[in-house]
Image (cartoon, rainbow, N blue to C red; front, side, top):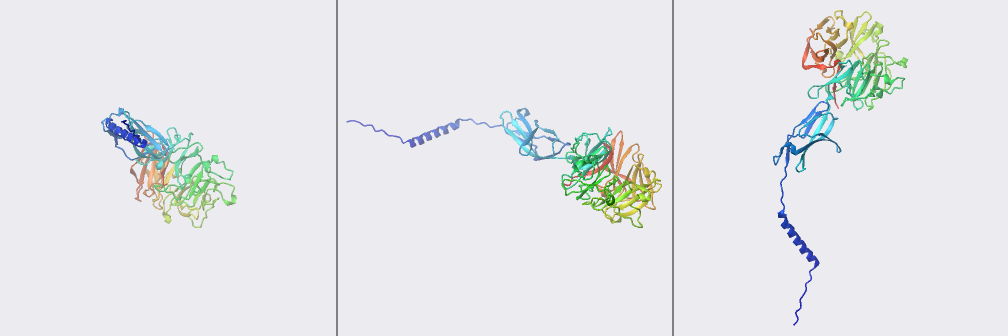
Length: 525
């Protein structure tokens, strides 16, 4: 009998399933054959989520610590990197040491700071992030105008953002690239729009505006960029001398946010409405309607109620006449203010044989004028002086008093500087580096010589009507070879029977420029 073998055929799908099963089984067995090793991990400590610094002032110092799971703490095992990021794409390496020591010279703004530690053995990077805010030291403080040791016009600032920091050589470092002479003023032209919010430096050699955050400028940053007169005026020869309104409190408020007025070295007066974001000035208003083509040069004073400037006055040097600007919007000329019978003095100083010598706006509130009154000193050919007190609104100005300066006020007519108190009938003045105070209270006139600065040159006296106007503070600037420029704040004693200056604690600064003028700066926006 023949034996027959039967053949069985394997289904292909089933074969693949079996093969896959065997493969998985093989892999499952191999898993137990691999060896895994822990890595060295770092923990970064002594770190904050937010840092801040002032550009041009601070050095950013950050000293983080780290610990490792393997106790590998030798810094030679790691690479360090500090990265500063601005926005999504811009970044810069600012340090490659374990601790950061970075002199801040970068623009103001918000940045991201990244600290990276790379383990050299594994290449693994560990990092921390923080927000970094860079501010400017120029937001708040006392602005100084004066001369450097070489006699050049210079600006400086006592920055008061945190501690008081002296920022000097601001014109030298500004980018103007010009040696200036005859310093006059350094002030902040506050306003609503960026085009108005500029720093202005004025001198006999010219005037320039600076960026309020960086204090940078250029040779072309001049008043001519803002002048668009149709009159035949060479705008390149127009230098800014005074700007109004001024700051009137320590947070940077001004007497009016709607208007701005400038007076130039030629005696021209220009006005603008600050809602014009470009801040342009058109034709001068120092003229009268009956001779409109002739510009009348103004004395270097803008007279107005500093608490609220909506109109103002000025002084015509050609005709020795106080003039009025009755509106600051849409007005292209000035007017003659009217005299009335029985007035204490005439607006026409020439008619009384007098000329203006000095004018100052104060917070004097006599007559119920809470926004402040103005004082003017006039002088006749014989050297006799009078003090005029008036409310200098251009629309219907009010004469308040006329004080004849008595002979006891020695050298009053020859004084180099004057400063009027807002709260007392006292005017300070200097003559040949001596400080005097004259109480002009009628019937009780008194004279005082204050021997406080022997051996020093008195370069400036000025009452504070900007930072803390209610405190009746007098700033006195002096100069001597040992201490260079010194600025000191005093408070005038309220006792009406004497004149005493009380020094304010911690308000004396030395090693400054030779000071010509001081102004307050504070940002409101």
